[in-house]
Length: 232
Picture 1 (cartoon, rainbow, N blue to C red):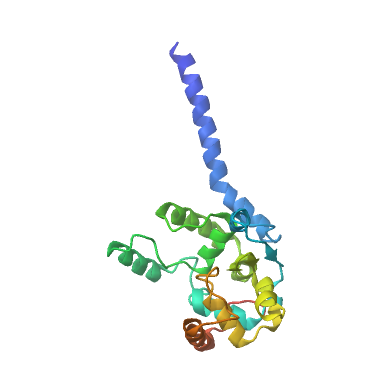
Picture 2 (cartoon, one colour):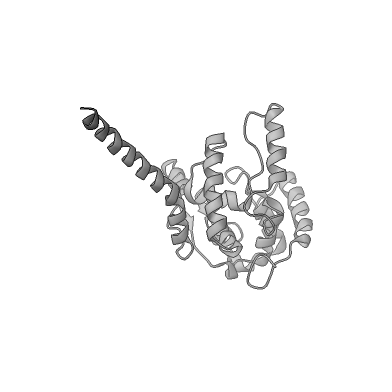
């Protein structure tokens, strides 16, 4: 009788173990696909489509994205992109301190790698659960992909306005030029609006956007790109 009772429990344990293994490996398998294949769609794109936004995107290789824009997003979003392995621990400590002091959301500390993980596989949000899953996916992302591919993915899937995704769609929509021809000023303004792409426009900048763009343009001087790769 005892042996019979144990068999269903054993089967349940095996099923749970298999599910956990699939959940553990699924991000890695998908990232390996994205190492060679452009993502056809992301969760955020689907969510925005349900919300009534359109979908404008056009994949281009990193070599066809202006070096100005590559420098601008690194200067604006993640100055240590080429040095870290997915996480800026100093920024993480600062964000946690702000949270403890009363900011009840997890703010800041997102590297380009973390943002790429979020945009490729996850939903919007700033909860600890979402951030935890994002960190887990980021470990796989940095372990499997080169910095070149991570930046290439990031610049092709990031949201740049209502229904606008990626550098090529953004460059065409806001400035009527391909991403390869973006100027230094245009690149800086595109980088500025990334934190709030549904509210800010790079082609009609207010005082704040202009000021931030000037700061980013200055910081771009400190970002060195290698030949054929974002990191020297």
